[in-house]
Length: 232
Image (cartoon, rainbow, N blue to C red; front, side, top):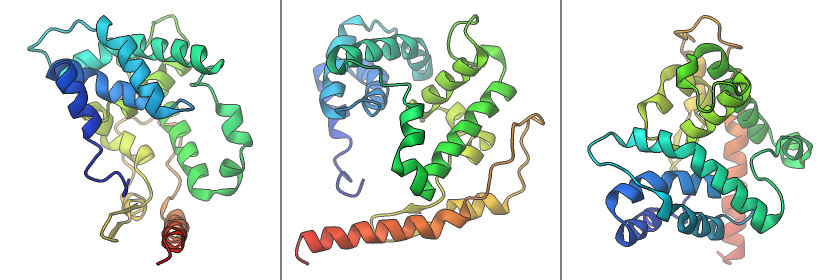
């Protein structure tokens, strides 16, 4: 993110020039989000945009959240088909690969992030009304909760993506800004009483402040490695 600071908006601005502000606002977050599920995000993002843009027909005057919700399922299915065509395999169901990877087994930060997302999915399944969940009503609730969590993370500008009870699961333990300042969100959330509006929450979020120092040490090692590569 440091290397991309100041330039992350360029793909959106280019899409807006090639289409219009409405299509760009609707498609950019979804295509960028699904591209990060793929084996080659930049190429996949461009290919998915090319595939979806002719299919989009939106009406002005409604909140952008309506467009994101109406497009999510179709965009997901097109992304799955595109990834299957390009790479010969699906891109959304890699749980076994994740659990077997050294990154999951050895990296405390990555493992906690995966645990938090699993708990967030359980939380949505137990504590959101059926109409809130994404997907057909006949689909298993657990799968609809998974799709809903993916949708909320992909379209994170929505108020529904930033409710306090959901943030208790998905907020990162620590943020380090480009100027070196850190924001220990994990410690902040650990010190707050967890008062979910829904009493049937699957589990209390585990403490995150304990992994903050580990994550900062990883970031410092990465920065040192970059400096050595540059000969500084």
